[in-house]
Image 1 (cartoon, rainbow, N blue to C red):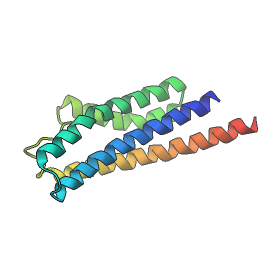
Image 2 (image 1 turned 90 degrees about the horizontal axis):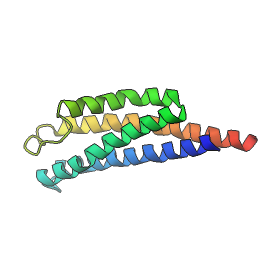
Image 3 (image 1 turned 30 degrees about the vertical axis):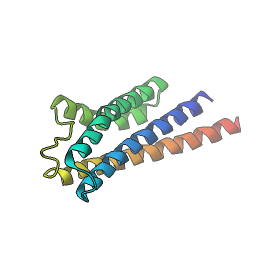
Image 4 (image 1 turned 180 degrees about the vertical axis):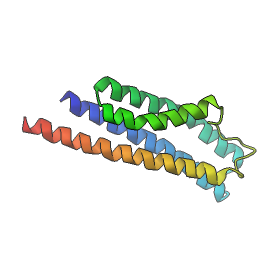
Length: 137
């Protein structure tokens, strides 16, 4: 039962990360189609970047504490990328360069979204597997 609860928490944490990345993509799409000005778009994206990084770190720590080593190993490259961006001070979106970097920023977010969807499906698989395993006992 504890394993089922762990996978359930993991599933909702990954869903929260997916929602944050989709929100960032929506802000970039609004900027691309001129529904929002660059300052508002950059400020909305920059507000959710650090919570995204912290959420990914907490998710990795959660996987390590619950003993899900494979999932923790799958989270390491994404967390390493986020830490590298943060240490190089490239994690925030620059208001003055947002139009020039729009395609690159969208590609980054789409790659993150694909990576998180993979984690989401794996988490969902293990959630269902542990639920069925608990049901058999």
